[in-house]
Length: 446
Ligand SMILES: [Fe+2]
Image 1 (cartoon, rainbow, N blue to C red):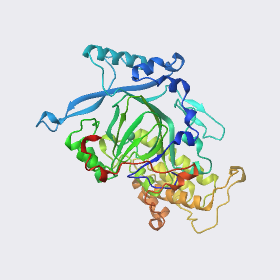
Image 2 (image 1 turned 90 degrees about the vertical axis):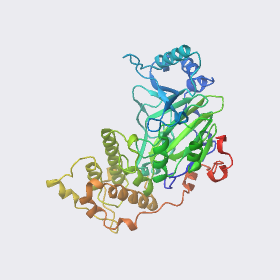
Image 3 (image 1 turned 135 degrees about the vertical axis):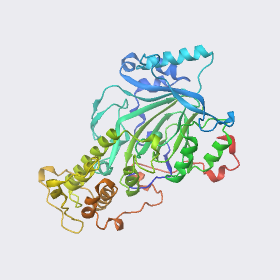
Image 4 (image 1 turned 60 degrees about the horizontal axis):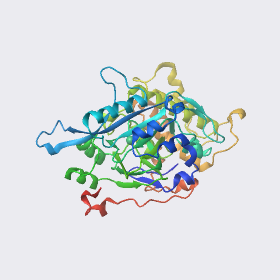
């Protein structure tokens, strides 16, 4: 989890919610309300005290013909239609969204398929501060997160961790996330309280780009078309997530999910970038090739995230007294990556990097030291990913000359998808993931 590479993989921690002490982190009002078969009933079962303070989106399956291929009607594809403003009237509350959903079902005389409540969270931020946890502002409805379960200094080794925007997802049978890559090329940790979920993940790079070109925004819904079956055969992993499972995958890989089984699916996601050079490199390729352009994050939001990373990296280097590239320069480099033009003038003096890789640790004022000290191997790994962050900053070539003279030899290659470091948190093993090779004879059963 902390150091390993899970690119092109899905790592499932069976019964992870229980083993990680996260089962009770979902408010009881929500776990009670999920005991229905329909999203509308779920929303109506939430207490007013919660309902009036949360927001979310509701989508359902609808058919749309591919514009680029008008040859045959078979090329109709299922996508998610999201309920939004109707005739200028903004549907902002969950109750309004459900009313609109029910009105459309009544008008059509049949229930919508694959109704999905997504990104359920509080409208306003609140300060979450549990004992031993990662205190901070968040909009999550959860009481605690995986981030809280990872102890310092291990938690600080993660280059980035977002639970500010953590969203809860509630899906009816055959609800799904259409094929996409995330707006930011980070990793996701999914926590699944109820229901079963199929997840397909494609290899990063060319295979993801290929499948996105052909099937972007499609929901893989049975009966599958032959081209969808072929696409699934090229997936890196097809996984069935069970109630109670916690699972990790990279959002930089093309992925799609489908809720299966009658009961409502209840899950939530946190996003992170771990201490692995390959994941850091992929993260830094957000909003540039090979990141699928239709999924790019807004440039201003990406700038905010980079600034957050810069602050965190700078803070960690300083407080743990990690001998590395001068932390001021690292921060400067990362921030500069958010500018359209390189900084110049007097600021260039700051770029005189103290290459302390082989030198003595720099003295850090006593008051900034934390009680716990990071192990040498942890420091080494963090230093490697910091150099990777800077190296990937293509807008800052000048800095690289100083800060990254011999880094390629330092960049640690991933260890083939091993996730043994999850054992820091508890037992981990692969769930029975369905290998695509063994699925050759099961074409249309997905
Ligand atoms: Fe995603």
